[in-house]
Length: 178
Image 1 (cartoon, rainbow, N blue to C red):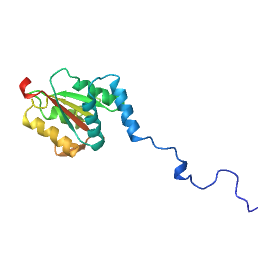
Image 2 (image 1 turned 90 degrees about the horizontal axis):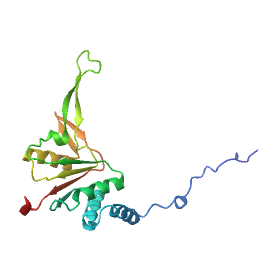
Image 3 (image 1 turned 180 degrees about the vertical axis):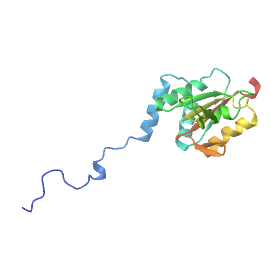
Image 4 (image 1 turned 135 degrees about the vertical axis):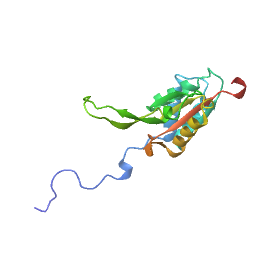
């Protein structure tokens, strides 16, 4: 009559009974191996990108066209199952083209007034590839820098948080190739 009921013991499993955590070095090497299946000769670039991602930083890649800057970033994103978006920075690019904007959302039924809503721009991603960062106007560069530093964008006085993780990878051509 004083015996415990049948079934599992109410004692929690000891921490050493848990499956071992995956070695972080092995995980990073696995990512490098996965990217190496697609991109050759970019080990230094890949190491810098992984370090920035782990540290919550951002990266500036400088190089002439055709050296696989975009490919290595997109392949890394695919290997880590992260969302990636690319923005070609041009002299006419506006800040809202990167951060997003408030738009009029018409009524779904067509009757009555709609409302305003925020439509996120391509900056709402895990990896933002900002191609030719040296080309847009200063206001557009400032909007990108705000999102990188504060991890949010502001529109119409409201802050909109960006996804985590977030890494901006900006590219530019060397001065002699511009």
